[in-house]
Image 1 (tube, rainbow, N blue to C red):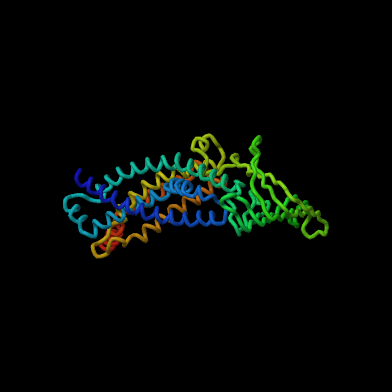
Image 2: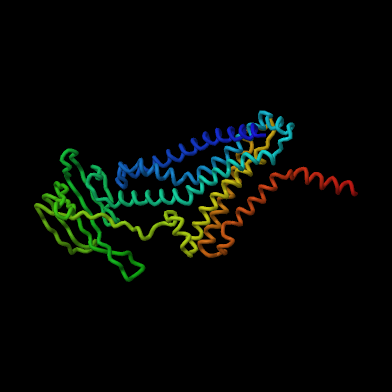
Amino acid sequence: MLIINKYLIREVFTTLLAVTTVLLLIFISGQLASLFSKAASGALNVNTILALLGLKSLSNLVFILPLSFYLAVLLAFSRLYRDNEMVVLAACGVGQLRLVNPVIKLAIFFALLIGVLALYLAPWAQDMSRKLINESESSSDLKALSAGRFKEIPGGSGVIYVEETEDESGKLKNIFIQITERTKNKNKNKKNSGNETIISAAAGSQMIDDKTGSRFLVLEKGFRYEGQAGVNDYVEIQFDKHGIRLTDQELLDTRRRHKEKSTQALLDSWKSRDIAEFQWRVSLIFLSVILAVLAVPLSKTSARQGRYTKLAVALLIYIIYTNLLNVSRVWVERAEISSSIGLWWVHVVMLMVTILFFIDIRKITESFFYRRKSTR
């Protein structure tokens, strides 16, 4: 039996590596397209792309690994059924229940791995990626400006446009800046209005104050217009040199997302959203184990049906499982159900479904109708 367990574990692990690689490549390709798009628009620093890609891949492994393990068990066992190896094992007295033993051993190992990822590494990766994005978006470094493109000023207060840049000297030519100072309007039916500042200059460069370390954009030979949109009352200023202080957007570390909070912070909190987030992280551990065990009876096929016969059914079960967890998570966040019930009822239901799959329902139904027919 030890040899059979090693053989089954090797088959599952080999398939797991292949499935995980495919899913990870699909995720990385999608993330790269999104990150390069943000970098091209100037919203993201090019130097942070690789770091962000690594952090996002680490944080999303908690979703990729359970699905990979589930599909690996399903595909590996389906191949054994297709090649009639399961028939040989059944003839040797190895049934489905005995096949669960190596799967559970491998599932416990992956449950521990997913637990470390979900409870510690994924929140840390989410937090670090958010900090990198905030720093990149809030950075007002002129090197991030692309010639011929509008770039939003940090905080969304306006835009800046540079027609031409010199790589060696870092000097900018033909600069246009639009800044809006928003003011709250008491009338809710009207949009917030404020003063508009339009600046155009022939050239500009960055200057750093040696004493304070503050950065300034020094504009040369231009005009500054101040006024309110739609009102014929504005101020026009012509200048030879005009300095604008460049300030970085303040990072809002105090309003961190729930995904970025540490597990200890969630445990110390009594807020419904924090409780829901903690139960979600723990649920990923139960999900990986239950799905792995469910894949054993689900993989049962005949030699004629092929290896991928039950793949659509398996994916449907996975979608239903995860959607139920998401719905329950929202219910806990809104305090519509008790936190003691929380997301746990979903795992209980799926555990019962797994037990039913191990029971040959067709034989039970046929024997039931046979008994009723014989009594008549």
